[in-house]
Image (tube, rainbow over all chains, first blue to last red; front, top):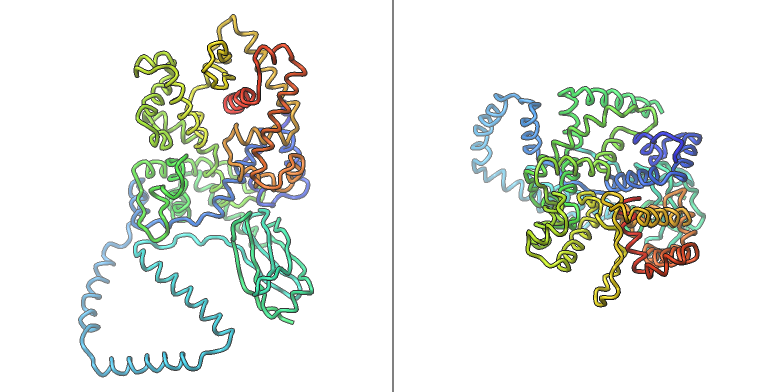
Length: 235
Length: 323
């Protein structure tokens, strides 16, 4: 028979997040070791938390959310007159925008062609190429968003962040989950391997990392690749 | 540190307002967590169905289809969130965001939802709807607590066919973690489904819910033996069976659980190097339990003609319904 009270949900979640102090954490661990029911609760919360952390949620369309709010009587009636006013102004501006202006088109086209040619011939340094790849990904993301015109992100999701300061790699994850971190050369040679356990982790970089200008930081959750980033090594 | 403290204070005051059902707080909550709430609502309504085919969980870029059932569940989750926010004290260091999302997405909330849902209508879960119509009919009659005899008569079924359909229903519900929808079994069976031999009639024991006085000592004995076996097993072994049969976790999830600090010793104790090793380990636990049964209750072991399959069925029923 258990001799303790049920652990509050909040405390189990704080334990999983790694936010309890050493004494409380040991106390919870002792109960979880002894009591199968509490252990099952912890496992349930662990998988629930991990799932919420790892899922990329569909973004709820504003119209849908507004409908829900209306249904439960908390709809914020945004200025009704505001939108017709914008609409009227837009209707006035549109003919001005679409009015043909051959001279302006000619100048704009010339500038565009010049820009493309400059870009093609000058090329740019390695760093610029990497930066451009980033821009392309960003452009692709914007295009993807445009394909879903009625969906606007409502929540900024927590994510993993990595940073190298001096000879230490700092890795922050939103929840204290055991994951595997690898440092690889760009060619794919493994240089370092360790486990992430806490929310805030730090690792002293091994000396072989300094043989490279750039390395890849990779984080796995089981077999799933969660994170990949190329970092420049300051020597 | 100051930022963390400020966040915690904000969390506390927000939870308090949500608990008081402040319209502004509910509105803010929905703005902040609507994506998660729709995900959970879709998940609850689609338990036992692969994620790819959820109506709501389409791949990013496709339109979202929210059914009436999902909308109802969304509103139910909103009410649960206001209730659960009252329990948030903010004194243990858990952020309100993680707390509320984790609590709402948990199996415990799912079980509460199932109770609410089954009270409202003659609810048939998705995993049963995907089976044949006859399974749906049997499921609805089982929900009305009809006996197997009544069901066979009503649907003009042979008992052996009924058993086959019942097993399909049970299996689907276990996979979807909705076994609670069935009432505790009327028989605690250790049948190995060997129906070819008339001499080998499966032994069936009345359960604690529906026992006849003449069988009572035997039922108690079987239950006591099972309890003793689970105590005899190591903590890691018992918990493995509890997670696998009692809670329907996949081997992958169980392995991930045992990787969690400080439970890595379970991996060593059970000699698990990958999730697939769990199947072999379960077989080993069954054999170990059989040996214990034979040693401590040799007469019953002989009388029940126990083997690994029967032991497995006995364990399955015990962990699913009684543990």
